Image (cartoon, rainbow, N blue to C red; front, side, top):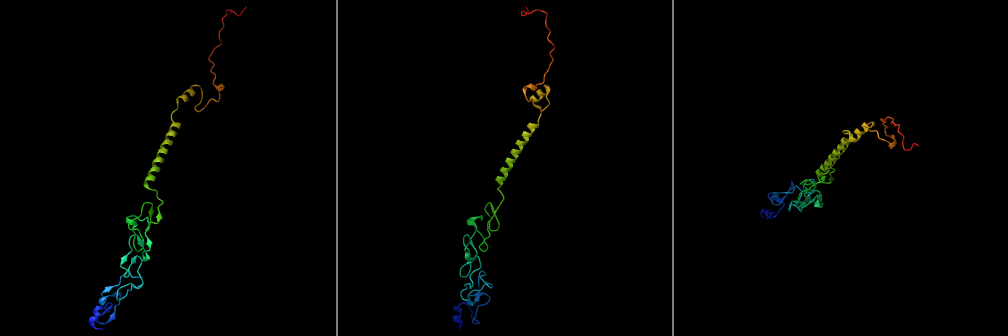
Amino acid sequence: MDDLNCGLRYGFICETYAACTNNTFGANCLEKCSPNCGGLNNACDNFNGFCFNGCDDGYLGKRCGAPCTKNTFGANCTEICNTNCGGPQHACNNVNGFCLYGCVEGYHGERCDIKSDKTPFVFNFLAFIIGYTLGLLLLTCIIVALGPKSQSEDKDAENGLEAGEEMDNLFDLPVINNLSEPEYSNTESIYDV
């Protein structure tokens, strides 16, 4: 092969007419194979640079130079990013699917695939307010029940009843006998005949 024709062909080192090595390709082997070529050594065709073993996960094209587009990732970009990924179009890493902008509310994990068992702040705050209000209501009831004596208890004490003692029926009323024997006059009434 002459030097003139060698310059027109790719995939050879013209000075030695040898095929490209060390994952290189093109005229005089000056271009490197894509690091995204699949396989152990990222090998590619020494003439055009097309990857022999396809692409690593997350890349497309004959030279594996294009990352997955939109919201896809993985082998041949066939996996779809989780819809729980935050940010535009549920964007995720083109290789492993990890969410780039965090998770939507209620989810966590690298791929936002774990449902959070935490309740949002609003619900926690609402529960606090309800609990606080019920606690105050209960405390008020206790204070009223155990508070100072009422007027009726004072009257019961005057009538000889102990605090908390109730009358079971009307005939259990305490009898107060302060009356003395009536005095009768010696006058005859109209009924005496």
